[in-house]
Image 1 (cartoon, rainbow, N blue to C red):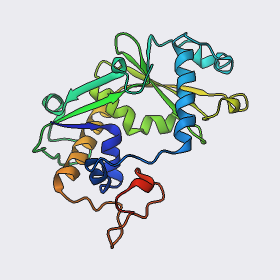
Image 2 (image 1 turned 60 degrees about the vertical axis):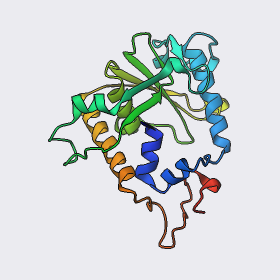
Image 3 (image 1 turned 135 degrees about the vertical axis):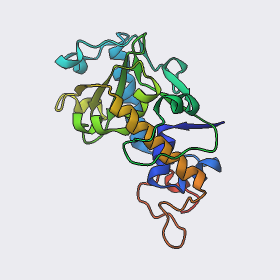
Image 4 (image 1 turned 90 degrees about the horizontal axis):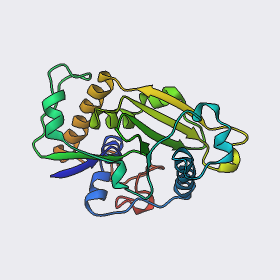
Length: 232
């Protein structure tokens, strides 16, 4: 069975040559802003779990009503993991009236995994944290395929909470983190299912030239694998 995640499928949709990078065991390039984002995630998660309140976050009024019993304590925390087979999703969501037209029927067996940044004990409310130089808007989060994939994989998720902020804690005083709540809908789930099948269709096509020039070279400035891309 082939294991897929949102990040893998998104990578395939954007530049399918990276599927070969993944299959060859290449590692994504380590970038400085990953470390800043990881540290910000930890601060926000500790605050929302009540383990270590943060002065700046305590001043965000919209954040005061939220508390998450379970947050990531380590990378790939099993308490925050979901794992669902494509076969089980097919039974519920495969139909002839998909949002984007004709559906593809996969030949292989797949399962979908992922990790939320936090959740309640009943998996009815999920937490997503986005840290960036340009703070996310609620519109961007509503449209984010990652959110839709998560609520597809975990049908008990009634809503997803986004905490959006700058990466550096010292910037939170000038621009406070924002909090958005987005309810889960059946339209979200149907769109995510169609998108997942589209990614699998690319994988099973055997054509992994996406993102390469006419000479088979990757010149993408933001290639997922960066300098470690085998096509550089």
